[in-house]
Amino acid sequence: MKNCTKQLLIFKDISCKKIEADFEGGEVSSDAGVLFLRAVENRIG
Image 1: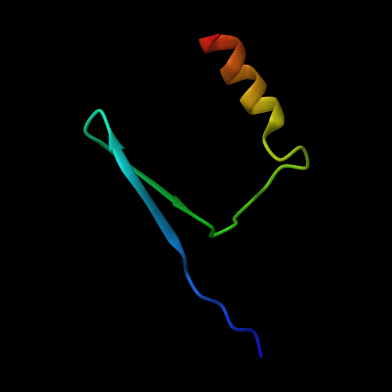
Image 2: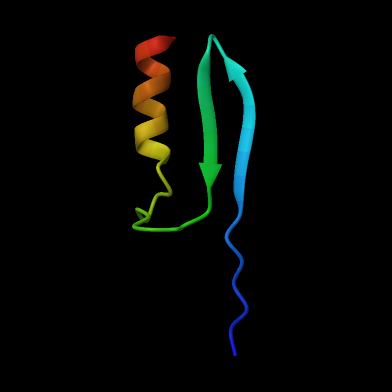
């Protein structure tokens, strides 16, 4: 039997914006999002 618990992380608000993270999984790319993160870093410097 599989024992699963839902975990939600709530971070301190940044500039009055609510920040949350969960571990639902969903679709994950084979590069784990590295290409996306590289594009974001290149854009914001």
